[in-house]
Amino acid sequence: MAKDFQRAWALLFARLILGLIFFMAGVWKVFQLGPLDHARKYFLPFSDTFLPVWSLWSVGVAIPLVELIAGALVILGLRTRDALVALGFVLVIVTFGHLLHEPLYNLTGHVIPRLALLLFVLWSPRENDRFSFDYLLMREKAEPI
Image 1 (cartoon, rainbow, N blue to C red):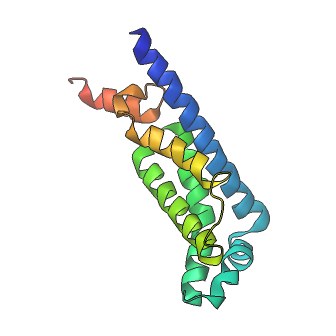
Image 2: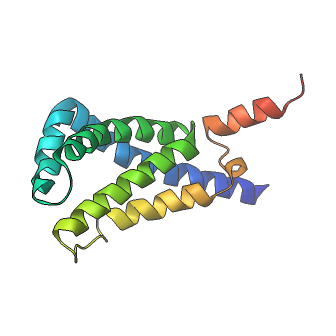
Image 3: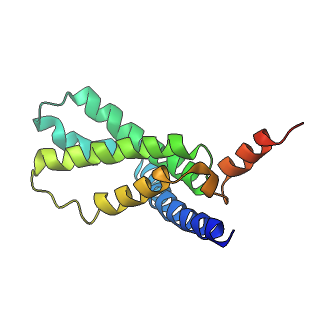
């Protein structure tokens, strides 16, 4: 029983840190910078590549919303797997962009720590995440009526 709670605490802390990183980035990008300015500042500089400008606008506007919503879901532990997959795609897109402009970009300060937390939470069995809404909903469904 003690190991179950150790795993639950480990998952909670990893989930909270990861969720906060993305959620707070989303809060800043959505409510302070603005999704359009996010796209303009961080995505339109890639218009000198093979990527179509419409795709830069689309992804640049969508990412802040994905970070905000998926980050909040990860914090809550609600639809965690779906949120983690969405955030995994954000990391892939960010990695691709950095490497497109700078093929030897150092990913250790930004991408790798987030990816490590994401993979830890994603690979952990759902039943170990006892301090999540997903766990409560899973237990509620398992109880006979």
